[in-house]
Length: 277
Image (cartoon, rainbow, N blue to C red):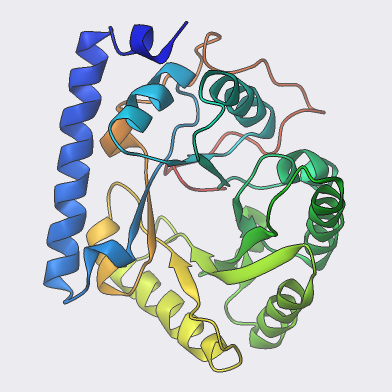
């Protein structure tokens, strides 16, 4: 099926056109309120659980990057999009938790990984990305964000923000890895915490870490419900799912490849669309 045929779904095209316009307007207003240039903030559509047909529509509407959280589902979509748009530049972001045994697979398609939080995962991703670079299946190192746990509950993912020595150790490990590019930090406000306080803490941690690096460190922060607050605190990438894609079809077999204990990257998310929780 060609992209033109995908675009014949007039209702879905209209829905995504309107919602993308609304999301872009929100981002522009948030940037203006924060005294920032909206072009410095990426709006990343989170397309997990949605079909490749939506990605084709969004690509026609000017989106060139998409966020996924399950490796097998993402790999299937990547293959579909590459077959249909072989000459298009599409950047795929892994926003879900990554098991080490999935590092090689993720490195085969991901432009960036937002949920890196351990030395073992850094080592696995570095090894996989380095091999892919040597084989010519990657054009550039894998960009990685270190996920910060803003409440210290590392069972839900992330490095405890209250352990600065560990944060520094893992940032340094990612920065010196040949197959990786350390680009910044990622964080998700805990459900019971005021997002304003959480994002302020994340921004303060980024500023603390920044002192050790010449490159400007980015912040992957903010989702459908709180992107304005994240932008106020310096987010450079907001991960928007529900506000753009609509209600997520969690159980649709036409969208999600059946998952087994060996193929799943993590349990189903508890809450927000870009969350690896």
